[in-house]
Image (cartoon, rainbow, N blue to C red; front, side, top):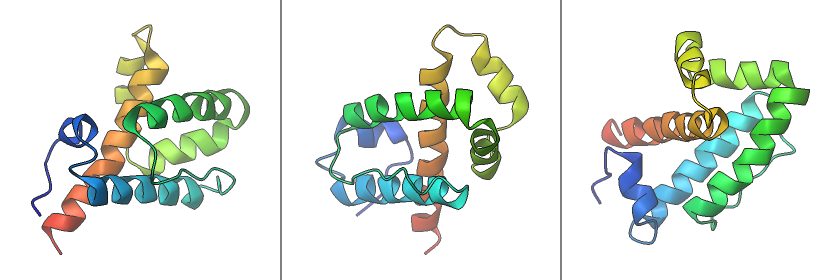
Length: 116
């Protein structure tokens, strides 16, 4: 199966790309665990809407109560400080940041499939 280059292709039709969607969720779990957030575990059978809704309170708590883990996560998945500053200029900063985190995790899944 060809893997789409854009995350939006997957989120618009997750039933068609079930295996890739599951790989993305597992990658997100792995990224969270590698920065010590092992208490957070995402289920692979959730919809994109459920993912966005589920990550919102998690990321909000990380930003306000576990700042060092949050910064480590952003560093781990390679979101640069100037990109964060750009996102902070928007009222929907948290939603944009969550989307960017998921997008970076998807890029890992994508490139891994391209080079395997």
